[in-house]
Length: 128
Image (cartoon, helix red, strand yellow):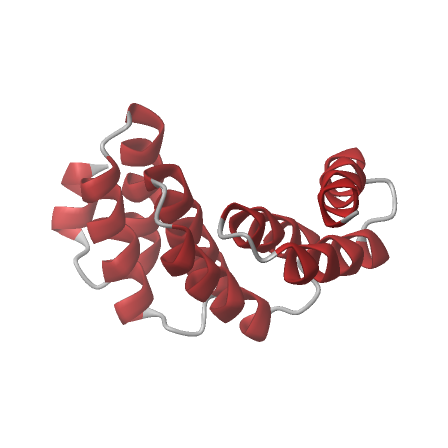
């Protein structure tokens, strides 16, 4: 991936792909650099914002994750996974009501999502 990004420095997909590899390897700062480069090259690509949000989530930077997931949702409001992941980050920030809203929207889009259903149930239990 490093070689491809060097050959095609204006190809956002190259940076996104390398970012995914770095994320899997636990090189989160390098992954963030690559996802940011991809976003700068193609700011309208929801996948790149989502992937950077997931990387921030992996780093425990939940507010930054929420911001990126929100951008991804603005660009593609039909992505159930983005709503589920934003709900998780909001839950970690203690924003349980907002998390419930995100999990509910995720379920509207993907009714068979056991993950979103379980996450929403957890938040309802915490809310009382």
